[in-house]
Amino acid sequence: MKPSPLEARLKRRIAKDGPIGVADYMAEANTHYYATRDPLGPGGDFVTAPEVSQMFGELIGIWLADLWRRAVAPEAALYVELGPGRGTLAQDALRAMRGAGFNPPVELVETSPVLRAAQAERLSARWHDDLSTLPASGPLLVVANEFFDALPVRQFDADGRELLIDVEDGRFVRGDGVYRETSPAAVDIVRAISRRLAAQGGAALIIDYGYDRPGHGDTLQAVSRHAFADPLACPGERDLTAHVDFSVLAGAARTEGASVFGPVTQGDWLGAMGLAVRAAALAKAAPARAGEIGEARARLAAPERMGRLFKVLALVAPGWPEPAGF
Ligand code: SAH
Image (cartoon, rainbow, N blue to C red; front, side):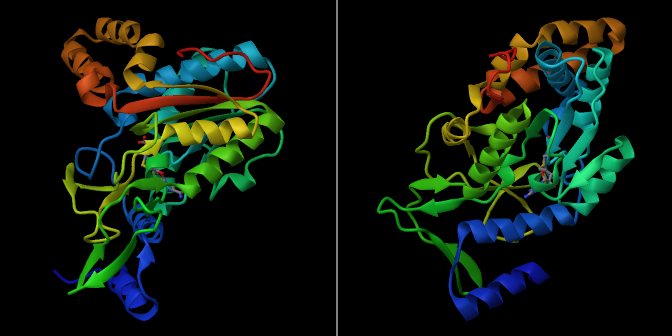
């Protein structure tokens, strides 16, 4: 197969300047990947929780509206989402929030022009390239689902040497023995969110697959057409992710003064938020869809499906009430 323009460019760069870090490779690959397609859904590369069922976004909306009501209502607050994909989660969450009397302005942090266009079909919002341009006053209610796993990671061996990607015989190769991963980009974003929460009030809900203690070695993976693929082949044509180290994100948030709740598993959190009740109500309203709704519930919450690998972490502004579900 002919190498893509990105693959050719990375290979020229390595030939000229030497091997590059895994984070560099991942950033280049994912920027191209998301800029050039909508990867979500059965016809794409992967399916996320909001695309499985409206229940996911609705329960997040209820969580946000409850916190808003107990903390600052009737004062305004902003809905902020990082990496909103097709905008499905925001659409479902906003519907639930409006049902609870809360109709916040929407601020979306999204770099992909293709996904911005998909979001604009469903939402009226303002768009940002990063957090720096978000409004500087008013509480922020931030949601990030499967956003942090797409951020670049660095990899190190047991002696603390950074592992690099080189080219041999026309293929990308990386040294063996990944012992530790870090995501400086993820830590920077969590710190920026936490500083905003301390200054403006609000909360953030971070949902992703990952672990609650460090030390898992190599978690870099590629997904294409719903199957795992080689992360060192076809950069920019496959979704590259790494598991999120929630203990590091929690620590970064605490150093900036945020209160931290969780991580708890997605199954436990959805259960505590009333997934069973919501599923029963939807099935009662549409009996012909009861089987499909039950299947979606299992997919989101059963431990062997998304229920245990996915975790939920809340960061809350100092002085704000305890959030539901933890
Ligand atoms: N949250 C959505 C989409 C997850 S896919 C869902 O659950 O369905 C990852 C999302 O993050 C995409 O919208 C992608 O374009 C966006 N994204 C990835 N890296 C980004 C970055 N560095 N800055 C802003 N958005 C990014």
